[in-house]
Length: 419
Image 1 (cartoon, rainbow, N blue to C red):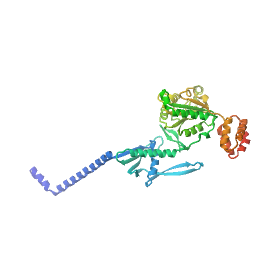
Image 2: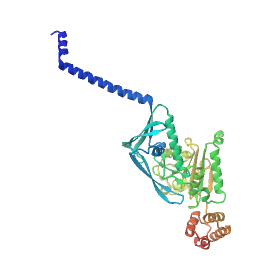
Image 3: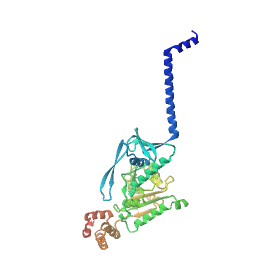
Image 4: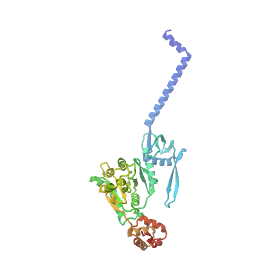
């Protein structure tokens, strides 16, 4: 059969015609589907804007709190429980509903914004054991300003929640994370140190904060180190907490005895400490002591972790150490510290915080019993110092708790403080 006759026969065959039509329709639908997909991709790329915020970013918690305020109509929720301490000391429970995993839509400044909260179940944060999370914002248009506005509002909301409070951070892995809930700021005058000592430290810290250009112009590293030493219970850590509240700074707690702390990790933590924060190294004598003591008893006085003594020194003032940093160290045994650790450049100001003086005792009495005659405070101080000349503010405060509303009884029984 000639080829032309064969083609005519296929053309006249109804089964072949129907099959060819189906193939044509299927091909057309497939092409249309592919075209729609490519069109959606092009539309999203050129006419939509997306912002992804991972859980490790500091703004993630801010945005969840912001979403709580702006997604009141969302029906799929998860709960976050927090505790609030009122001025009276009473603690109440607060529940906040945040959008759960999945897609949510909110109306913000004349725009619909899709919010997708996702969780990667196959990957977890090895430091906390929690799955990786992220939140993604998608909006029509190409103006990034809408996301800047959202982030700015979320930041302002977070600052309002922390207003009048001190945020504590602790080292988790290679980053700083909030430790518990923000605490009410402690008034600086609630910590009574030796006369003039608190003012001297505050003045030095404030002068450092206010003059970064002075350091830059003279080529001096812009960092400051402080060492508070003295017997336990005399107010070293309490004063640093109150100082942070006075300066509106946060506190970064770092334990040198942490067995997972290495030289590199310490250097990294100091370099990524939150802005406007005081780094607090408590009881540094527990981790690194005098080299002479280490020779006498190497098992007892060696570094307790992978952190080396030279690594600590380099982190404080080495070539790779960061600037714009304030570090406070405390110890009960300054004589056990290696001189290399507390030399100028690493520790710029050393202050002894000791037992109560006559002036301290009168100030504490007047603060605990406001409205009482100054003569009673003088009488109390004399009675205490006759009983003992080595009493810490913590002991005095504990003693006052036994006589909350009885200042006369506190004076008459001061002899019980005798060691």
